[in-house]
Length: 367
Image (cartoon, rainbow, N blue to C red; front, side, top):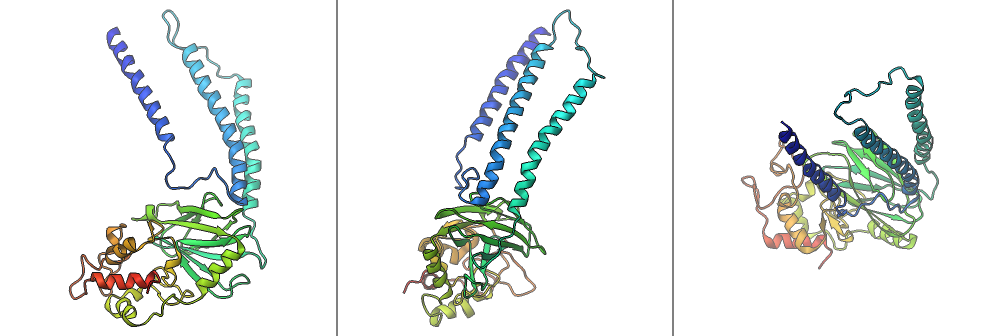
């Protein structure tokens, strides 16, 4: 029996060491998605960080104290020959019971005061002509950004995936969803905010310096949740105004002739997308100024001819979609973009390489 106990102890020690080492290894893995909530680049994120760090320090100190107490009790009251297994009982010790009730309550109270204060500070709604108002809509699975007509924007602008803002400017983002529950999160600029159907939530963004700040949906919302990314691009006011004016203008090429025929009657792209006016919304992303973006497909792929051609011809091969029935007539329903080369319903045309090249050239603004 003693040999069995020794064997079990010998087995448990390396197992525990392996679990501890593997946990440390996982915790040290690099952050490949580029999001970093510990590197605030705006007032809201800095406010959150100013609360998080002191609370983290308190939590670490309490954690160390608990671990130390656990080791002390385990060693101090371990089984020994000739000693009773039950230690001295402290039930009814009023001082101890009052102490371990009051001390945690005081700690929570100390943490609660700055926490509540921070919540109210972040909930303040900015107003005035120098505030940029943006309506962000969570789709399946991409983000639409609409800048309605306002003092800073003379005409409606609809874009997707990439939101351009001027630095040192408060941006009130109104959050909407017409499908599932999403979560809007640009960690370097602000905290998370749920995006819910039939309800409008708000979050305030502000960048202190130019840069590109990555974000993602932080609430599981379906098949391609992991590909529902976004980015906020902050620039000087002059550069932002140049972007704004370009978006308000029409497409780089006239939307006529072969491209209009291909995207309209031939392949039905216009059922979901708009190609010639950046002021309108549709079921899918507005593609009038797609060439001005650096990414597409929910921010998953770099915008270049190779990626875009693959996407136009067979999008479901690049991102998971419930799109097999997208080219069927009603009452068939789908989520996503259909393939024009595979699973094509009978009677529907298969996209040729030359047709795809013509569409991609138009989207990239190439002649």
